[in-house]
Length: 401
Image (cartoon, rainbow, N blue to C red; front, side, top):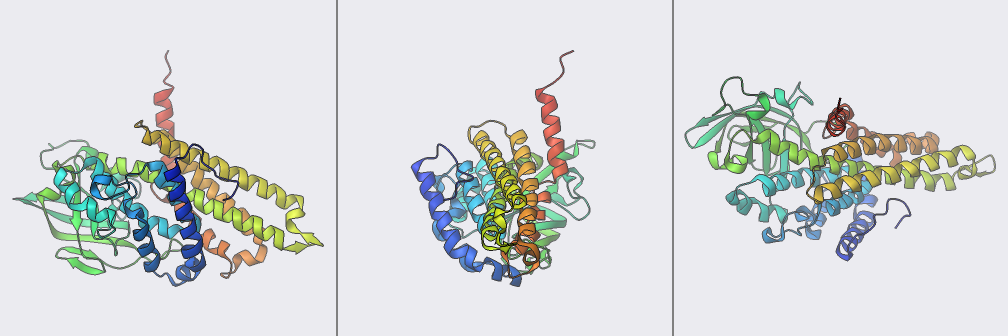
């Protein structure tokens, strides 16, 4: 265990889970991550190992076959997994957000149907808000769900769907005007639909097409896709929570815990970058001594380590706040913003420490350099986080004149 990024007051069970996950990362993920990433290959063996560890059910209640753990435990596990290979944490995270939304907002029938199989990793989740051309402006979505008897007919195109090919259950946000008069605020006429499908690409069920993987700069291995709905029929009992018009709130609740997750990913990647930098600095010699003995490099290492500690502390605070039942959008926004920005800076400093070798695909830091930018935009850009933080601060510190 390293000196950095320790978490106080963990239970024995939490420590045991984290120790098991770290051991799995060191033995099963780190030795193969670079090779799989360069081939853009889905990490089937790693995912099977995570299933055996029970990680797909980490936060699913015990009554549904999960481990019933806290958001903090989950975030610390994500931190460890991202330290090994960030793409693997993405595979788990989208599944976790759908399970969380079902647990918080699903009908009893929906929970009974999906959560036990999600805990076992048999049903794999993905969620879909974004569309081509709208980015962070969720209220501008155009995908529609229209009631037709006992079914809804879904039409529209979705974008940036993590696990789009491998998932078997997708939570899809659509506009549904049923029961909402003209002029209703956009966010009050959205509904989350639970769409079951076969894994794979092409037409995975009548009216639903997953065209194929989007070729990305980093975040490889995990499949990121579009999702096209053309007359897709969904039973009315697959409206999340059973009531239309609640989709925006349900998705934002999921994204709030997702932001803690992205902060944890940033912490994990940053820790790995620091490990690589501090190790290489002690092996590489210039001017007759290891570069770690040059003051310029020591200053870099000092800054990197301080940022690792600060990001970890903020992430842990945001998770604990949510676990206590309090509103945590301010803390989650701050943690996500700081961790992703610091991650990018720490990775770049480790890259600089490696010199020319950092540019070589032989060295792990090259992969991290391509992965870190995704954290700047995933689960809401830095600019969106700053908007959330600013608004919440003005609520908390309202001027009493």
